[in-house]
Image 1 (cartoon, one colour):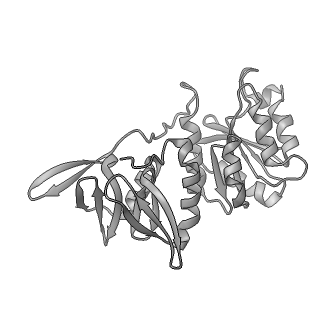
Image 2 (cartoon, helix red, strand yellow; image 1 turned 90 degrees about the horizontal axis):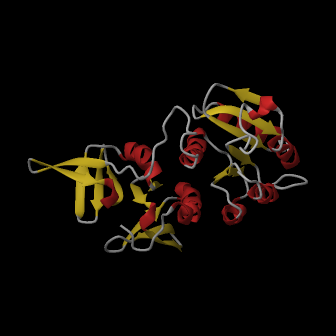
Length: 277
């Protein structure tokens, strides 16, 4: 077990029986400004010993009723006690920490959310994907426990100014069904029409990721809450959007895995309501 600590931020425990995987988790978590302290364990049994510890240095001033960490990032496949079994034990804790899986086993995604995981990250993980999981954890912390850096919330609806025949129209983000790249511009397809804005699609992808928008193709960004169908044909995958006249859009191969992962998680975060707007 090892510790990296700073003065503020989330306290996170990384668990992996493979040194390379554990080092990678520690590197990604330790480099994130939302994280103030990183603990590591080589298997689930060691993780549980640490989580039940009364050592005041490990507890960092936390009460006995509080979890020693805010979150556990764990692999699924480990000898002895597996990640799924660890999750079931954590569910019995009085105040269980948030749980995130970082794993190479795609087939366990649905089971992971059934045992209470907040997120499921496929290896190889990257800094942006880990940061997204940490934002979810921050939003779920008790009031007053948040670190100094405020978390964004999906409920904060952005308004986009659109120039139209000498008039500036304010378009709420919540009315956007999908966005289409058009060079250095982007076309917002809304519930009542479309609007061209001088914003690159990549910039909207970064800004709107926490609000439920996902890049599915180099040319398209969609509102996940409006995805009614995921279709597969000989030419690949496509999605059908609701919230208006059905619209079918292609999904590129490089974005398919992320889309499937997010669609599995969508019901847990209030998305995926058929025909929503």
